[in-house]
Amino acid sequence: VLVGNLYPHCSPSPKKVPRLGIYDPKNNAQVAAMCTRVTTVVYAWGQNHPVPKWLTARVASPKVIALTKAGLPKHPLYLPATTQLQDY
Image (tube, rainbow, N blue to C red; front, side, top):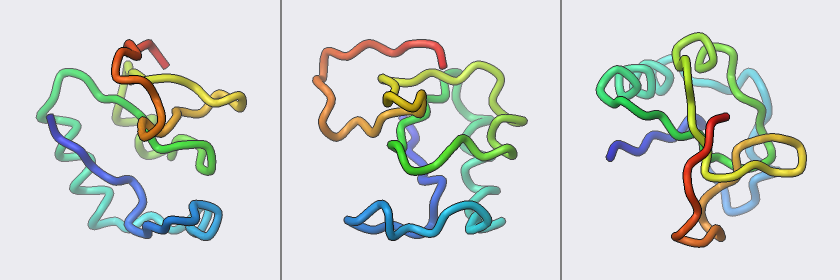
């Protein structure tokens, strides 16, 4: 299992994390490299950010643990351990 963070800015208050345009090229390169080393990529970052275009171009068939009402990947923190992966 490899875990990467799409957003180099972390906060206990997700709404305070800057929106689009904050992606760090160095961080993106690390996440992209991880994607080449695995057979399954799971999106799981929560409701405040859409899927970045650079990631959509790199990952053909992502999975999610669950979706928010807005159709974004849910963060796994409060999901039951028995939750099954699903196609995104």
